[in-house]
Length: 565
View 1: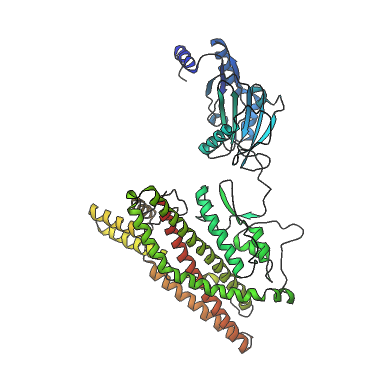
View 2: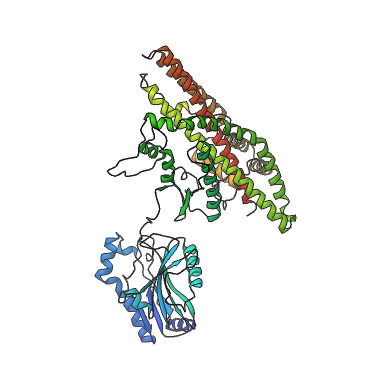
């Protein structure tokens, strides 16, 4: 290694403010999210002159040769050659209060509550474990403190700085800090927390149906969570009341939560209402959503098909059919109104540079209102679609019991036509073909710009308000096409594929009916099953299409909102 000039070192020390100094280890693998190396290497405090400084540097480097350090590397399965040690030199800060802050409570797992360990004295005494520190819980949302000691501290400033440090590193932190009257708060070191418990103060939460490309696919910003929470909770409340799962006079409940930067919904609360329905099977419900759960000695919750249970929910059966009917017309009737709103919002956005602050605020308020209305309708459509598919799937075992070859669910529900995202696939295939045939740069750029403008609201991350849309950055479309080309993917018009899938679905229905005719069921049983099958099958397909239409509207509404942020 290259030797350092003593004069340069002394000059750097002078720039720090001179002696006394603190000499710390700073390895390339220290303070990681998996291995922290906390307490494994030496730090030397209070170097009062040049000789003590050199001796401290030597001591820090020698600490990599201890059996304790080698054992730690072995336990973490880290090759010793991969660890490179550096030395960090800091001014020795004479302080009155020293502390360690965990920005997430390590025992309770509550991320809104930081655990603060502090005492009057040096930080070395605290981190060495030689003293028992005072503990306080600092609420990072409200600023409240569980202790009335250390009132000389500016707890508001400490809370603010802890949040800033955690936001910078994007992970819960273990932070060493100190305070004095002359210097105020000082922060020496921050490392990711590597050991903590998950919170147990909540019921059964899940991010099922929110994961694949949704808001739980990555950390969710508070604005995005607030928008989604309102739509989800309003939509589910309206739906549960409409089908008499919940009484109209009962207050609105909390269905959605944000923990650890991710979004979850309350599966336990949903199950509480679904348990009113005869035939409800918790294990089947969880399996359909991909929820893994241990049911203990009691087993999963199941609701019997007793006569009394059936009589209790007879109104629900009728209301469910009414809800299917009404939701279809809600989506249908709101279609033209939606596109009128889209035109108005995009026109206002084009003229936003000339708006005063009052007009801008009113237009933003209008977008927030319309976005919430669209998203609530989308969530209610999701509930109807889920029930339509569940009712159809529940019929298939009865059909399969009568026929020799089981019905293929995936085939029956494929080839849904009229879905809006097929428009972008169709136009993208046409654009790809045009670019292959066109060499003129200006013509190519105009074609890409037109496509990006027509499908302005799409993005690789449509539920992330910080992600740019195609209409804002047409080069995203060009990059996507290049990626397809490099991967050897050939883009084709989806219409023929959809027609082929529709044909397969119809053939599957004909096959099922032929087997049903050959079964031992009586003619009136066959007639009833055929009619019931067709009703449930067509309704399931109808609501799959409506679900995709509302998904498209939702993406457009988020794009409107993004333009105002």
